[in-house]
Amino acid sequence: MMMNMAKMIPLFVSPEGLKVLVVGGGKVALRKCIHFEGAEITVVSEEIISEIEDVAAHVVRKRTTSSEISEMMNRFDIMVAATNDEVMNSEIRDEALRQGFYVNSAHGGGNILIPSTLRKERYTVTVSTEGRRLPAFPPFVIRELELFLDGRFDVMFDVLFEARKMCAGKGTQAERAEFLRKVTLDPEVDRFVRAGDAASAVDRARAIGVPQ
Image 1: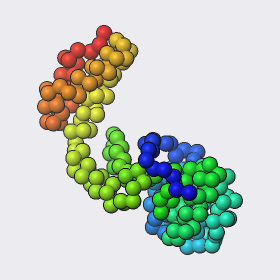
Image 2 (image 1 turned 90 degrees about the horizontal axis):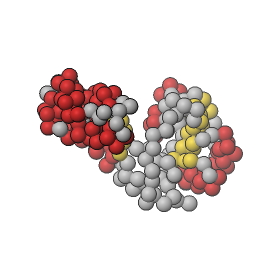
Image 3 (image 1 turned 90 degrees about the vertical axis):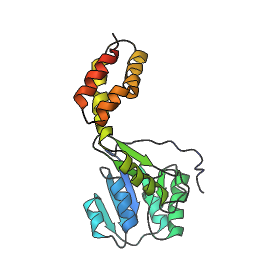
Image 4 (image 1 turned 45 degrees about the vertical axis):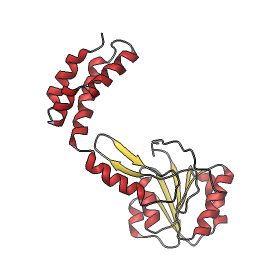
């Protein structure tokens, strides 16, 4: 029972309070655990690599079946099928979908996808092929973005943060949005940002005209 991946909605979800069940104990399972770090993660597998113990809240070392996993599902918010057995992953995925749960499968077809992620100090960028089986592509894009998203983006973040404080509570929402748009497009702001001169860029933003 594969999901139709033609249209998916990108979201950022807080892991706080989430209960995640990961079935599998190898490197793939570890990557899934790291992605959900901050959630309450339970890992079930006969063999579990030691690194998983640093991320998971609960580790259950036992040989299990898809039927046993099915009986556990109602205790969790998200299921992750990350074994090296494609048949078992498919069975877990299909049962989770049948029961109406969110599930990610290492072999595809779930209703949750785990994107490649680039985390900067001030912002985060993610890339996904939306279920198309081309796993090498998102990491390639992330590597390219890491080279492109240099320090000027951090400076622009800081300038816009200050510009937003300037116009807080002033004018209409549309006027505030237009002011911030002008700041991002202004050649002088851009020149100062590229030079790493945030203070001058903020002064220039103020001169553009804060809504009244």
